[in-house]
Length: 230
Image (cartoon, rainbow, N blue to C red; front, side, top):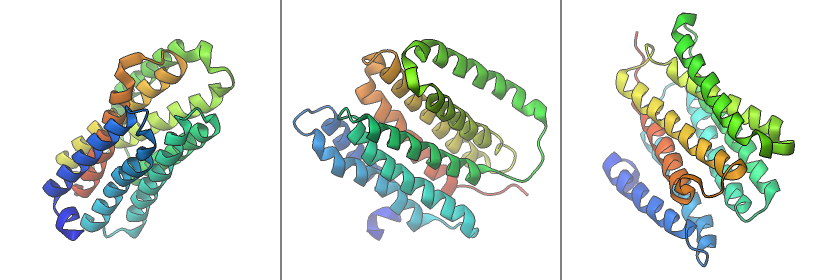
């Protein structure tokens, strides 16, 4: 395993192969159940890669990432079950994903002061984004209004803390994580619109998985490349 997971390029090839396999299984009615293997392997590979390569001395920060990735693995399992029209499992997946993002948010949190003016453009973006999504899906939310709103809030919270890393960490780490979080936003948005607006929107059978896997890949790499700016 070290032969693969200790080397970023080799791992990237394996990750890409697993993604292609999972995308194939996802779009095959006959082989869809194979996703229980392919998707879990795909998600687990990131956790193993992180464990092999992390040099994080702060054990709490390390545990936060491990916990987040573990929750995403569990969430993926229930998400697959949810796609079999099991709404309870879909809700469980959403809860696990939200908690995982909270752990990521705590991981990105820093104790240094920041100017509120830095957040104004970001907050305006968040307000606009949430307003547009809510406008499109509101009439179809029914009893999911509160859970939906909470999940949106958590997604924006993650983006906020990722954004606030800008002057606290090296540029490479910041941009890898930031682009990863934006990819998360695309994956979440398409999935939300698929569920509550248009089930055929944005080639969602391909795009949700693409942006989700890209997000996780970039965030993990960004964390591994992190160097604090003194």
